[in-house]
Amino acid sequence: MSNKTFPQKEKKGAAATIRTTAAKLKENLKKVITGKDDELDIIISAVLAKGHILIEDIPGTGKTVLAKALAKSVDAQFKRVQFTPDLLPGDVVGVHIYNLKTNEFTLKKGAVFTNILLGDEINRATPRTQSALLECMEERQVTIDGQTFILDEPFIVLATQNPIETGGVYPLPEAQLDRFLIEMSLGYPDRISEEEVLSKAAFRHPVEDLTAVIGADTLIEAYCAVEEILLSPELVSYIVRLGAASRNNPQVRLGVSTRGLIAIKRVSKAYAAIMGRSYVTPDDIKKVAPYVMGHRLILKSYAPRKAVLTLVDEILNAVDVPTERIEDEDL
Image (cartoon, rainbow, N blue to C red; front, top):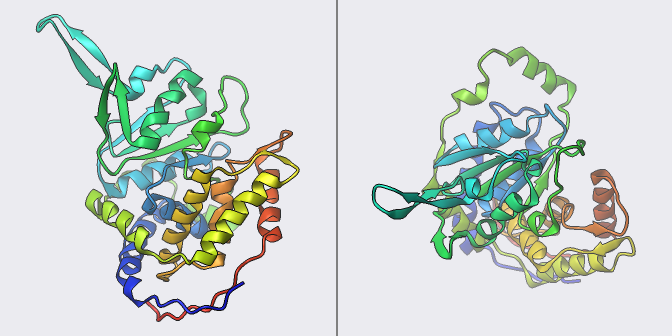
């Protein structure tokens, strides 16, 4: 427990940069996604924290629409891949093809050579094809026939999957899941929001009319600004204790990795700035933790996502929260 005062004034510029960028993105996304303000805040936090996003939900709830809307909101290169059982690793990362005219091998670049990659229904591809994303998601580079290519920044993977189907799907391995900064589920909209969606429904989907509101350079600036948001030593210790609690829980076979704890740190910093602060509070961590931890916990017996999230809440409630007195002015 602590009762320290942490000066925050020198970090206000970074927080304001993030908040401005986030506001532009959210306003654009709300043109096609209604009644999901909290979820949009988390997704935007993950984007500004330089992370990849997995959207898992039942059919027809807007997974692909959200991913396309997010991609269209950024003035950057965008590619979409429909993952199917016959998709090959070379389709994702690229392959060298022999040119009969020049008697040389030339590189045919795959879908990962872009800024924003939408992998639709990613769990329909074979494990071999899924693993083609491992290197580029973690190291932001790709190796083809022994030659390494650095991917341009920003590089974000937005993936969707359907959790209720078991036929013709290949569950993502733990190593793949760990590379997604957050896993998100939109769920059904509330009645008023659903009525609004139906009223606006037309032959032409509203997402087709979206235009970019920020540039790729703006996104890269936000990455740097997120690093400037303050996280006190007490809260660093709090995040570490959350990780330890997940690993020591009797229901858990494999708890949150160190990479997962770093993810909590990054997303909570971005979320704090979006909420108008230049520093992280315990509430910020508790807000983002379920989205970061939920897909990283491996239980000793199968449990649906809802049960896993309930367990995450139990872990959050079991770990003592540090108290801080922080002096700051409104942004």
